[in-house]
Length: 275
Image (cartoon, rainbow, N blue to C red; front, side, top):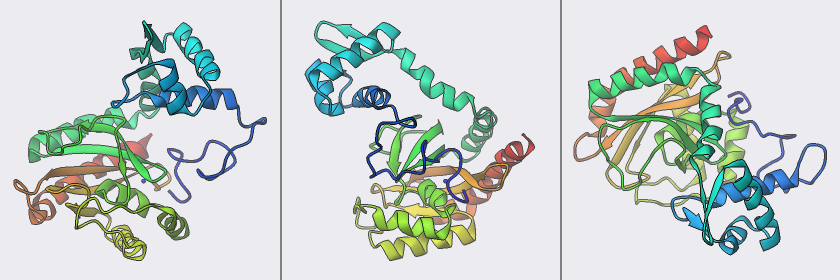
């Protein structure tokens, strides 16, 4: 999920690492960053917030949060109902701008729909963002996870099949640095939490061109993923097929689903290469 990282995931300024605190200047506008922090403070766990709650979740003063909320209110990105603020559907324009700027996704959607219809298993596409994957397309066959996934959902890259495909697209030096800095969590007894073992697993994914992950993120969840490449041949996204272990075994994923998944990824790659 890139010879350095792809244009999907390059840092926006000067290659600064995520744990470095950018300083105000010509390449960093603090007020804009605070505005984004306010938008990100809303979510499934906080769909409506008071001014004080926004300030606390965004790490701002009440006065700073108030100025930003009033600006977002005037622009139509939030609404106010008594003391509560909520995001409005206008926020979706920001995500849609990303998806519509990459026409490959409109081409990938019918390919994924055909794949799901053929296999009766859910299919998703994701890109890499730091230590997480972000879903950009999803065609569910039926719900198989306790997590309610959709476009924009995030999952850890280290224990997901798409995440390992995307990490495998990084240069080896970058991969090792990335994994060394990760906080690896044992979501299940099967989760790989040893950095060296994880690196070796991802190197194997790089060699074989696909990743199978069985019950490492959530009990019962199995998935297999393949890379989607940009015009320069770098891995820019990943495509997967997933199911529940009670209905589909790892062996079935490899024998039946993987060949069709690789064929679907090849179709999407052909579209990407042709643009």
